[in-house]
Length: 339
Image (cartoon, rainbow, N blue to C red):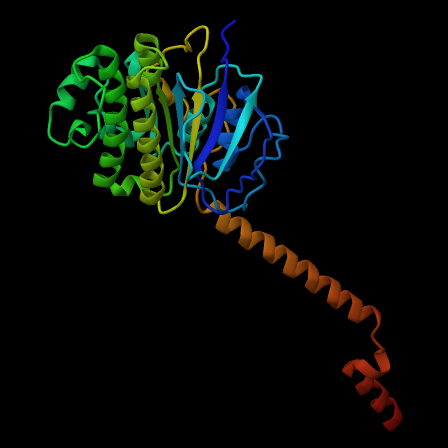
């Protein structure tokens, strides 16, 4: 059975209304998708009894959640973080359930749902907005071409002992390039980060693992790459957080190693059309409408006001003195006296 040997969850960025508590509370690896869903305001099948995440504001949710899984290292030096937690029962996980929830609730909008693993040349995209990310380099041939173009990270990174012509080094540099390209595309298409639909990013990076296998974890290549990736991830988190108007959650999971690679069932983008089909026989929830919060507040407070009004009126009628408070009885009494 495949399992992770070591995992650490680091919350790089989070808005104030998503309350992560600092402490050494471990969280199970299989609960990470539930944690991501809760931070985005979605419901989960089982309650997450974990003190690291407090209940947030009911009508305010982050615009995006970005989860980066880094394989091949125990931990990274990420000093500018919100909180860090160890993981227990470390089993493989993915965000497929969260991605399907985002796409089903916001199918008519433009949610960005991006799941990327450059080492396996795997790229999953859902939603109409993902045409923006079709040009991301995925295959090794595309990566080599991208690294030789203008705007490549090779011009700005201190490579030191890394060799841009070696396969393992190239894989690591390609992952750094992908992180750079994602923020560059978001800066170019800022409307994606400013719409009402939440976005989901799931990135799996294994360049450090390949470098450790190739050169050893005591090698200068591995040490240089670890320092580079820590700096790149810190800046990546800050850039994404800023692009989403300080309304994004960015998590980093560091994975030392696992015995078997993560496997998942391949699926077509066309299959996602069934999710948003109103006539689907799968008993899906209704599509989310952003007017829901407004309508809910109007109905709720109107019912409260009407209920209070009924109580006050009923109380006053019950305690009313007909001869003193009622003009009808007063007029009647005067008429009787005149007669």
